[in-house]
Structure formats: structure tokens, C-alpha cells
Length: 196
Image (cartoon, rainbow, N blue to C red; front, side, top):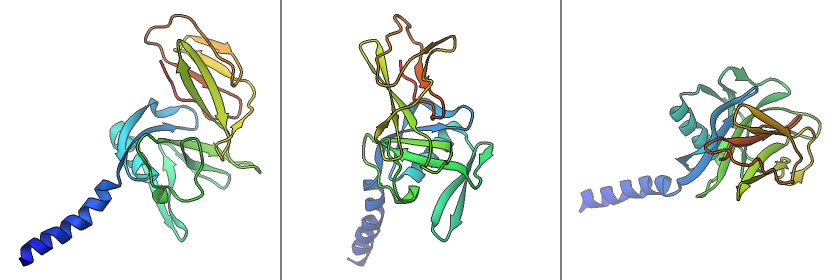
């Protein structure tokens, strides 16, 4: 009886952690280029810190954590570490959470974006997200609160050979481009995801 009780107790301690894990999409945008999964990769993670841990294992990407009085944070990914006005931050579903990456409980289908950012008086740079429908693409720029915002100098990239000026919120229909990825960049914004 004591062995059964011990087994049930052990299972009750193990199951909650695994029961909280979610299937999420993750991408890492570096200072000068995409470091991991331009089209986003699906991983299992319970929080945003676990999402970057999974991405680092899959993509063999170096990252470093620092433990401070206010919690654990990512202070370097790849070659670039943070400084007084720049560093590594994340968004979940286009929103910068007001808590650390280990405190954000993820749910199935969430999109986790880790990115290098230079910060100004109003926060970090907008992040771009591209959606596709019927051969056309639309880019939206999001501020830290997840609200659509304006950006200048939007450029569409069709594969590595074609770049076309565009604007946020307006559909871009490049014609046939089988198997080629499309993404957007804009002045002062974080690169978008890539979609087919």
C-alpha cells in the first residue's frame, strides 16, 4: 500500500509539469538575420523560456541565461549579447508580456518570437507578421502591446532574388512562385516570418 501511495504521489508531481506543456510555434530573429525557423517550427514548451531552449536544441544555437534578483533572462543568443539599450526579448502572439519568459504560460497554437532589439523611449521596435491567402500576402506591424502600427519602407522579398516595395496592410500578390518563401522587412522593424 505504501508503495502505491508513493507511486501516486510521484505521478502527481510529474504529471502537472507535462500536462502544462503546449504545442507552439517558435522563431528567432537575430540582429542581422534570421537565426532559427523563418517559417516557424513547432515545439512543445510550457513557457517562452522553454520555447527558446527547444529552438536552441533543434537549431544548435547558443544562448545564455543570467539569473538576477528580478528573475532569469536571456542575455545572449548566437554572437550578440545585450547592452544598456539593446538585448533579447520575446513576444507571444505579437504581444510583449509584462513578465519574464519563464512566467508566461503558453497554450496550444501560440506563436513565440524571440528577437534582438534596440530600445528607444517608447519601447522596442515593431515586429512584422505576414499572413497568406489565395496567393496574396499581407504584412502587419505590431507594437509591444500587440496593436497594429505604421512602419515605413516596407519591402517584400520573394525568395532571394526579388524585392518589391509595398505597404503594411495592403495585399501583395506576386504571381506564381512555387516553393519560394515570401517575407517582409521594414525600416526599424523586426523581420517578418516567411510563408509560402
